[in-house]
Length: 46
Image 1 (cartoon, rainbow, N blue to C red):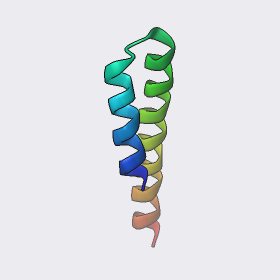
Image 2 (image 1 turned 90 degrees about the vertical axis):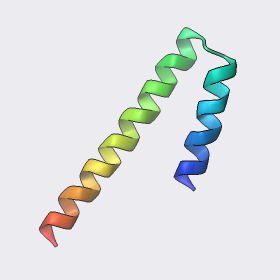
Image 3 (image 1 turned 180 degrees about the vertical axis):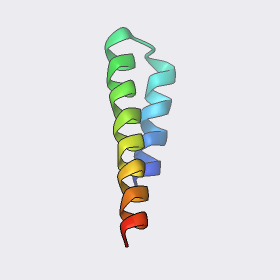
Image 4 (image 1 turned 45 degrees about the horizontal axis):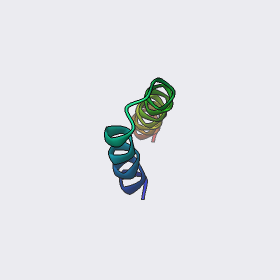
């Protein structure tokens, strides 16, 4: 589901390459990386 959302966001980003959208896109990518990093930490703990 998250991958699908990111794909849609990426397609929107390609069409509207605007400074505000670039900022939003960077935030989305950062959150996805943070989520993956948290997942990895949880795997190490368990």
